Length: 67
Image (cartoon, rainbow, N blue to C red; front, top):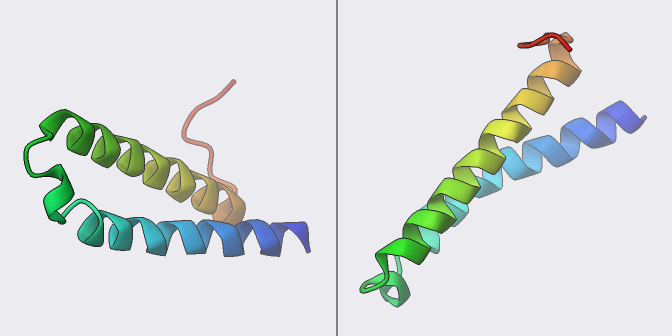
């Protein structure tokens, strides 16, 4: 049950981050502010990569690194 909830939250995050990137950072609010725009995009892409790793680990039990 907990694994299913974790996969559901991962899926929500994985599909919502591209929407946030497409809609929020396209607006005129960031037109003359390149550093906050780049920082937000890097932060969201990092979160997307972490969530993709969590999804792969939960679904296929693949470790990309060893402790």
